[in-house]
Amino acid sequence: MKVSIIGQGYVGLTIAVFASKANQVVGFDNNQKVVDQLNQGVSHIEGVDSDLLKAAISSGGYRATTNGADIADAQIVVIAVPTPLDKDRKPDLAFIESACKTIAENIKHPVLVINESTSFPGTIRNFIKPII
Image (cartoon, rainbow, N blue to C red; front, side):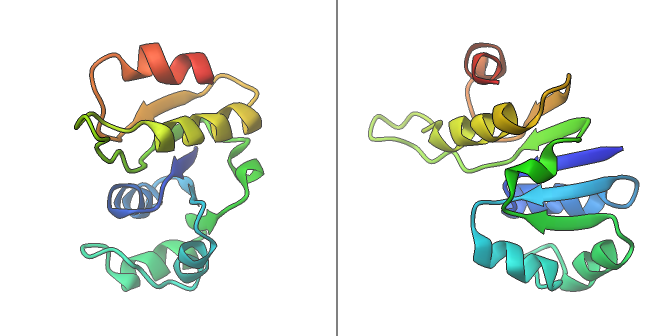
């Protein structure tokens, strides 16, 4: 099964490395420097050892990308992007919106979307689904 994880921070990379043991995982991130380091087997996340990342890469189970087209054939997409608080101390959904646009632009078949980003109840139904 192909799994795409949007956001390769502490949540996304952790999910990606462990999901790659049983799936083909594409880790999408907008930061080219992070993607380059990940593809070299260098983890930037405490708790995700570079040796685990290297093993995932060498097994063919994981690769990172900044190219949205690389998520096109995923059966599962996990959104794991930051949700900082805005000036009113509510989650800023701009990163989630960007992730949804990447999904909408690149996936043209039914897909399971999982939101791991911190947000409020109803985010998937009322915010994510209409964008996708």
